[in-house]
Structures are given as C-alpha cells and as structure tokens.
Image (cartoon, rainbow, N blue to C red; front, side, top):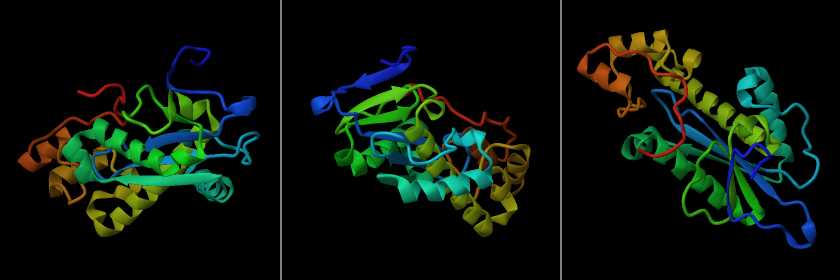
Length: 225
C-alpha cells in the first residue's frame, strides 16, 4: 500500500536481491468526450533516476510542452506502448469496460519487460499477467504514470485534430470531443458524425433531435455498472 493508503495492489513481489523493480506506468486520455477513442499508454523507464526532466500530469502542461516531452519519452523510455480504444468498442462495452480492455492490451504488450504495473486510478483490469497497483492521483505522484499520461494525451489530441480535418463542422480541434457549448451546439445542428459515441446521452439526444445538458469532462473510473 502507498503511505496514504490509496493504492490497490495485486501480487507485487520484490525482485531477487532487493533490486529496484522495473515499473510500467499506465494512464488514459479521453473517457469523458462524446466522440473519438479512449487512448491508453504504458511507459517503462529503466530502474533508477528518470532520464527526463519536467514530467508532470499532462493536464498541468501546455500543449507545446506535452509535444516536447512526448518526443523525449519515446526516445528515452525503456519501452512504451499506445493503445487506441475505438468509439465502436466504447459503445459495445461501455466506457468503463472499454478503458479496462485498453489497459489490459497495453500491459500485455509490455508485461515481459516489467515487475509491476502502476495504473492511475482506483481500479485494476482483471486477469493481468503481472503484478499491478492502482494509484489514486498517480499522474501527479509517479513519473512513469506522468509519462504515460503525456503519451496518451498527445496521441489523442493528434487524432482529434485529424478528425477535425474530416468533420470540420464539429470543431474537434477546439474541444477534442468534450461536451463544450460549441460541441453541443454543432451536435444539435448537424447530428452525430460517424465517430460520435452513440452510447453517450448527449449523442443519443442529438439523434432524437432533443436538447441535452452537458456532461462533465471526466467520468469516474471506479467500478463497473
């Protein structure tokens, strides 16, 4: 457990000889938006001092700073993986289970390189192939999770920029799919585009030609319903 008791751990074991564990940080971007994918990233640094200065929760960094750090992370990390969970999978599974599925796939790609996975939040995917810990506010506490949050955020923002070029009426370049007044207005006027999440209430309302209050930007990642 972490000092503040906020950490959920499964099967963490010390490495032989007490060597520092190889840690993979895992975080996601895009649970709350009404369109586009959830993006999950996992980052492994070599044990010891992280070879990158200036890491932080991606939400605390400017877009320009995230872009700079993105390039440094993929250059200097021991291993990394970025997983896109499509809007179709989100609609089929629901946002919680789709995010868990994306985390499971990211971890499966890297588990042979690590001793423990640290996931931002308070929930762990089931059936992981390695030891895992859930860290509440991990993107402000663990540098590998910070790095994962940056890879996920930059990758998703780039995707939403490309989506804007395909569907400029929705202004995805401005709000990245979140339920801002500009986005909700476009959704009511034009209806959903192919990348909107049909399982989300404002999109359902737009399909019916109804008004719908805005969602919050982030949805809880606590327990499945």
